[in-house]
Every structure is written in C-alpha cells, then in structure tokens.
Image 1: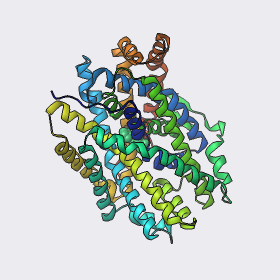
Image 2 (image 1 turned 30 degrees about the horizontal axis):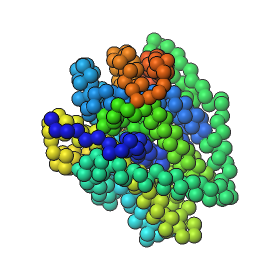
Image 3 (image 1 turned 180 degrees about the horizontal axis):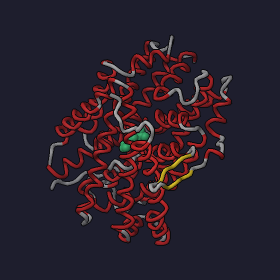
Image 4 (image 1 turned 90 degrees about the horizontal axis):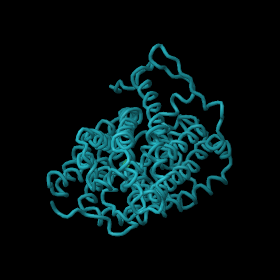
Length: 457
Ligand code: PHE
C-alpha cells in the first residue's frame, strides 16, 4: 500500500477539525433551528448536549481514527471487529445523505454573494429568497458548489484542506462579531436577546407514559432530538469525518486538548451567529420560527440593504460563509474518498469526481423544492445522526473498551483516571442520552399524527 498522507503540521489536524466543524451548521442551521424550536431552551439543551454528549463522542471517534490509521469503514475491521463495520458504513452513508442538501445551501450562499454585488436582494429580501432557494438556478449553483468541493478534495489532504481553513476561522469570528455589535445598536433588537438567551425553565419538561411502548410529551419532545442532533451535525459527528481526520494524526498529539478546542470554537461561532440572526429577525418583526430555512439569508439581506457599504459587507460576509461551508463539505466528501483510496487504490481525483457527481444527483430534489430539503434534513436529524453516533459510542464503550483509554491518553499528560472516567461516561450517561434522543426522533418520524417519514410528494 502506498504511503498514507499525514497532516503537515501539528496545527494541521486541529485546523482541519475546526474547519470541518464550523460551517453552515453553525451559521445557517443553528440560528434557524434555535428560533424554530424554543429559543433559549433549545440553546440550553444544545450546550448540554455539545459538552455532555458531543465531546465524549468526538473523543470516541478520534480514538477509532488514530488507533486504526484508516478510513471510517476500514477502521473497525482493522481494530479487529469486522462485525462493527456497519457503523462506518452508516457514517459514510449519513455523510453522503447530508452533503446532498448541504451543497444546495452552499449554492444559496454563492447566489447571495452575487446578489450582494448587484444589490439584487435589497428591494425585497423575503421574496428574493423564495425565488432563488429552489428551482433551476438553485440546481445550477448546487452543481457549482459540488464542483468546488470536488476540486479541493482532488488536490489531497495537505494542499487542499489545511490551507483553506487557516484564514477562515478568524475571519468568521471577526465579521460575525462586528455584525453582532452593530445589531445590538438597532431599535427593536432587545426582545431577540431574551428569546435567545433567557430560558424559560418551565419548558424544560418531558413526560413519558407506557402503553406498553413509551410515548413522550411535553416541550422537550421536539427540542431534544433537534438540539442534540444539532450538536452532532455541528461537531461533524456521526459521519465518519472525525474518524477520518484523526486517522492522519500522530501518536504524540493530545486528542483531549484538541477536542475541547473544537467544541469551544464551534459553539462560540454558533452563538455568535445566533446573536446576529435572532435579534435581526425581531428587528424586522419576523416571528421566530416562521423564518425557517431562510432565516439567515432573509435577516442578513435586510441588514445589508440598510448598512452603509452594505454591498461590500454582504460580499465579504457570504464569502466567508462560503469558505466555512466548503471546508465542512470537503470533510464530508473526504470520508468517502478516503475509503475508496485506502481500499481500492482508487485515484483521488477520479473518485472524488465520481462521488461528487452521485452526491449532486441525490441533491436534485432538495434543489428543486425546499420541502424536500427539509425532509432530508429531518431524516438526518431524527434518525441517521443519532443511530450513527450511538454505534460509535457503544462500540468504544462496550466492545473495544479498555484499549480505547490507552489510545486516548497517548500524547497527553492526563492521568488514567480521566481516561477511565471518560470510558464510564461513554458506557452509561452518554449512551443513554443518545438512546433518549433516538426514541424521541423515532416517535416524530413514525408515530406522530403526521409522521415525518412521509416524503413531501
Ligand atoms: N459540522 C459541519 C457544519 O456545521 C457540517 C459537517 C458535518 C461537516 C459532518 C462534516 C461532517 O456545517
């Protein structure tokens, strides 16, 4: 087998992991899901999930990747557990599924860059979003976005991915930060902050009755599956991405420290985006929850229409969002490409192009109708992501067990106690949290009055 690539620098891995994590999930999806599912209550559940489930799960994926030094599917076999290969397959499948509509939203971002130059959305931002979010134009831009992703992945790990990320994270933080400060000065913004930041504790309730199957009710029924899966989506978990990236990491690097950096950065960017988008919705008198998938685009377009030098700000902003989206999408495609390269000795450029083409095809319904995009997204959140993360957790906790702790501690100065605590948390609380998430997701998907599993035909 040919020499496997590794990250060029120590910082390469962490940059790429942050680059994978920070993306449309934080900037587009987090504000819109938060405003749709209860504001501050959603934020609380999201943060608990990111730290309590996301962090330990990320460490589990890192361990699988670094220990095996292989792609997400090959990894389980290499560790000696052929029967667990399905976890890798499911992760790759989930990534494939998600990238299909992620790329459509990436196309919207391209569109809005252009729209900022010409000022096309200035007159009526909501109508503009309605026009450009679905249809043949959206399809063409979905194709263009996929072409960009393929081009970068074809270039290989070091050249393509490491460089793109270095610039992105600081720029996103600065631009979002400046926008957040500006939004703060706008009249009418303040109810947005209480909606986003001060939780109504009475909303934190969930009841269950058995008949004989469990059935859940209460405000958290919807909030939990969306908020927990939002943490997975946003941290790039359950899609083999972190397994794949960690497979290029040396034994001398502290996985523990790296995972904390990723979680902190990632949540910070999401919250910053929320501080821009949610108050803006209130300023414009848009009911939280009615903005839907267009929340980011409509609210910001309105802002840029009013800002001095709005066109320039718009281009720069959507340009940075584009880089964030690309660096995430790259990691999704990389998962599949890495499998094909490791296993079949496939040539990187060809396989990247072929797979990119398939993902494009899968994204066609989402590009033609946002109802399909929503359906793809719901299925990923309620089913694919929790099952896939659960698979990794059960594997590491109950199947692989102790050796995972040794691998985790390689390159770290932490004592064995921390490692064992992690393992026991994974085995118990973390697994139970994901089981609950999945149970709630399955209820809305299959047993609700209007089961979400029914496609929008
Ligand atoms: N975490 C990325 C985001 O928030 C999306 C992503 C998921 C990327 C999974 C790679 C793998 O946009």
